[in-house]
Length: 218
Ligand SMILES: *[C@@H]1O[C@H](CO)[C@@H](O)[C@H](O)[C@H]1NC(C)=O
Ligand SMILES: *[C@@H]1O[C@H](CO)[C@@H](O)[C@H](O)[C@H]1NC(C)=O
Ligand SMILES: *[C@@H]1O[C@H](CO)[C@@H](O)[C@H](O)[C@H]1NC(C)=O
Ligand SMILES: CC(=O)N[C@H]1CO[C@H](CO)[C@@H](O)[C@@H]1O
Image (tube, rainbow, N blue to C red; front, side, top):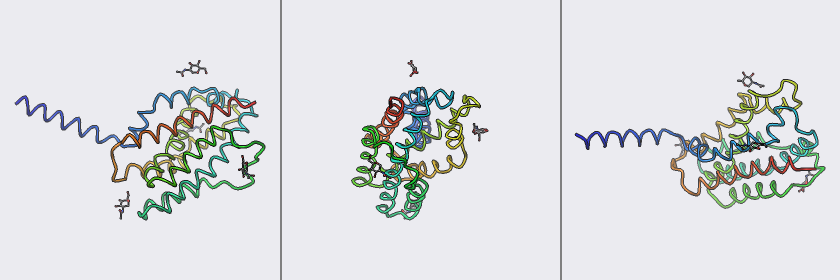
C-alpha cells in the first residue's frame, strides 16, 4: 500500500516536472541574472526617464550592430537544419531582425561586451546543431518581452523611452518570441542538459553586460 502511494507520488512529480517546458526551466535557472537586469540602472532609467539620452543612443547603435550578427546567426541555423518547419522559423527570426545600413549610425565601434556576445552567437551557429543556436538566441527575445511587460507597469507616462517599452510590451513582439520558444520546446531534445543550460546562461549574462556597458559609456 505504502509502496503504491510512493510510486503514485513519484509518477505525479515526474509528470509535473515534465510539464514544465524547456524554456520555462531555463528561465527559472537564470532568475538571479534576470532580476539583476530588470533592476539595472539602465533599464530602470528607461522606465523613469532618468537614463541619459547619450547612453540610450549609444545602446541603440550597439544593439543595431548586435542584431546584424543575430540575424545572420539565425539564418545560418536555418540553412543547417533539415526540418522544414524549423527552417521557416529560423528564417522568420532572421528576417525580422535584419538591420538596414542607415539604422547603424556608427558613431562608435562595437564595445567588448558586444563583440563577446556576437562572437558567441556566430560561433554557436557555425559549430553547433541548429537547436543549440535557438537556445543561444532565445534569452535576448525572451528577456526583452519580459522587460517590456515589467517596465510598462512602472513607466512614467512622460519617459522619452516609451517607444522602446511599447515595442517590447506588444503582442506582436510576443508572437515573435513564441517562434523562438517553439523551436526549443518542440524539439526532440526536451531535457535541459549542461550544454543547453550553459548556452542560455552565457547569453543571459552577456545581456546584463550589454546594458551595463551602455550605462557606463561616457
Ligand atoms: C538594485 O539596484 C540598486 C542600484 O543600482 C542596487 O543598490 C541594489 O543592490 C540592486 N538590488 C538587487 C536585488 O539587485
Ligand atoms: C502593455 O501591454 C498591455 C497588454 O497588452 C497593455 O494593456 C498596456 O497598455 C501596455 N502598456 C504599454 C505602456 O505599452
Ligand atoms: C519538424 O519539426 C516539427 C516541430 O518541431 C515536428 O513536429 C516535425 O515532426 C519535424 N519534422 C521532421 C520531418 O522531423
Ligand atoms: C554600417 C557600418 O558602417 N558598420 C560598421 C560599424 O563599425 C563596425 C566596427 O566596430 C564595423 O565592423 C561595421 O562595418
